[in-house]
Image (tube, rainbow, N blue to C red; front, side, top):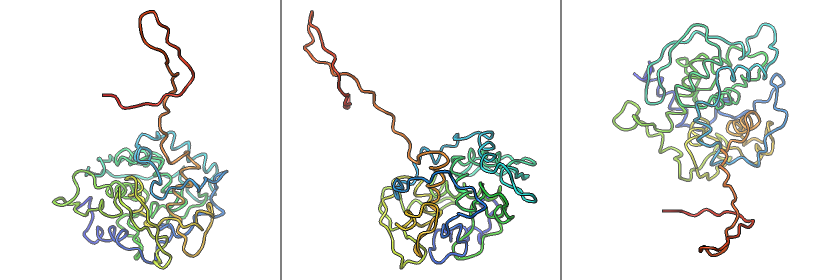
Length: 321
């Protein structure tokens, strides 16, 4: 069986994608805006006019498993919650004994260890599954507000990434727990990209690449209530495809106008909040394009004894054989 997964567990995990009706796990579905008094908000909100429904984040950023070291993750968590309320365990102080998992087409093997920090777990899972440590941190925040919470309940760790929490049923207890959630959530994100070793004829035969596929226009709902309408979205890359399978709604104009706050009755916030937190914490969700150096224009006729003039100008590259 897949990573110890029962058939019913697998079905419950897949049902998250295959349904888009009223949610029970509303935070995991992005139907509420995670913005409560106990969570420190960024000093300046991201510019949501830059939100691109078809390219929420560049592939090179989302799948960069070298984005942060363990020390950098720990420093980041410490900065987000300098002081945790008495009697609670904040993410910066969280520890868990993990277990060893075997490799599969989505993730390399994970070697378990006693008393691992949240930072270590995030780093190791990111490396194993080829997902950015920054992306995992943002997922933990947009699902449960866990990164910045100063008095997190046990449930926030139990369902930390909203993984195995379908829209129409309770969360699957097979995936309870922080390590389990980070591991399974990252596994799902990679699974949705249809990596080599998956597809017809394999144990992982579901064709997720045909659901909201890259390079095609898909109708993305604004809300589980289909009456709220849809947006035609051209899915540009695998990261955006995976995010829409994980949280299958795109923000409407009211959600985009609201920043971190609530929009209207047809607003959903999961992918908006992913963009918000990533941008405010780590910068643009779009990978920068290397600049082309401008060179002076060369004028004149090349011949023995002649002088060529280098003037100011811009260089325009062209293909060469």
